[in-house]
Amino acid sequence: MKAFLCFTVLFSFHNSFASEAIGFYSNGSIKNSVSIDDYSDSHVRKLFRNRGQLYGTTETMRALAGLADHMKTLYPSIEVTQIGDISSKKGRKIRRHKSHQNGLDSDVVYYRTNERAQPESETEWGEDFVINGKLTKNFHVQRNWEAMKYLVNNHDVGRIFVDGKIKKALCNYAKKNGEFEQEKETLRRLRIENSVHMHHFHLRLKCPSGNSRCKAQAEPPAGSGC
Image (cartoon, rainbow, N blue to C red; front, side, top):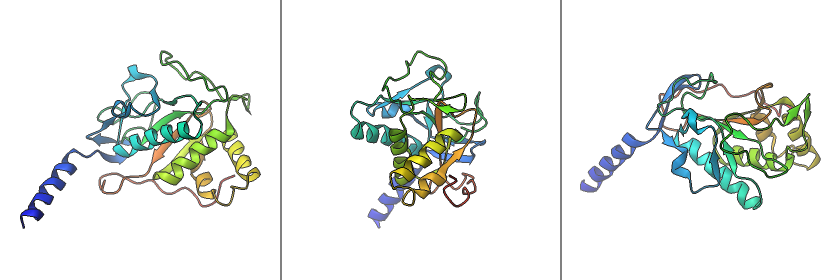
């Protein structure tokens, strides 16, 4: 009986401090948000720090830190993983975004061929990887494909928003390398949103288990979308 009571107290204590996504991506908030700075030991660099969009759910931070560590393990010379906006400390509406309100959205810079990270001092995205409707040579197709596969296969990803030219390049890469059938789910999660995702991809996780106040988004259509 004492053991049961002890477990109950510990469980309640943990839940009272656990992060929670509340509401929808475009109309929500966060309880007990986590800062990206709590994961400073990983290979992550936070851009646009003056905006204050450093916060998200534990699941979001684990996905970002896990991605950074995974990519550094695969490619030791790769640039640090660069993170743009996540959410404000309590969530809710922030400038420049309709979503990013419940801690499950985050922006990540595409990986570069030249392995040169954007300086932290820059106040806007440093480079477009789609110019005049064409993918630039500095977009590293293989490494970005590995990033997408890692996220979808290891975290509860709802969608990853990318530019149409970038999705086409990743579809072609998967076909060329015999991964198309095996990675259809990864390709399915890559959703095209042009004009805003030529310099970064937008990672969106599903509502975490146990976050009963989080409003889920409908699943993307079946098929690769290629």
